[in-house]
Length: 125
Image (cartoon, rainbow, N blue to C red; front, side, top):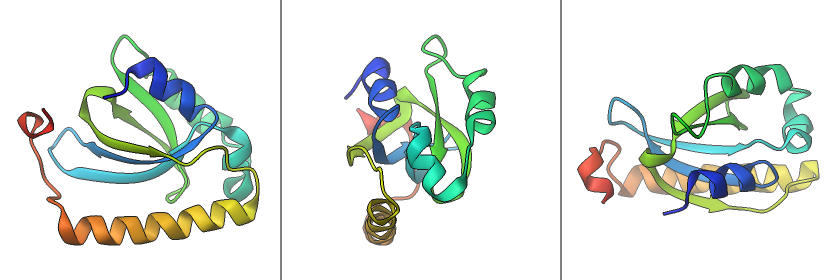
């Protein structure tokens, strides 16, 4: 599994499909990034939203703030509860973003049909 610095560093530039475990054991799928240029393509400037989460997220507590490109708001996930992450490079045009959103919709539909949507931490090992 990737480390906090690796994931955080790549998310500053790239967009990714993430699967992670929420505190309550539910599986959450997200299309996200920390790249402000990518976020701006659909959601305008969101530095305040992401910055608010950054104030509570750091390597010390294991939480990474990220902007959810589908819901249009900042969220956070814990690096130890990351089930999978699939990076899709730097998204710099609206067309690239729209294609990635379509890909994510298909990925999410398939995942929800074929994978458990609740896990516990022991299942991640």
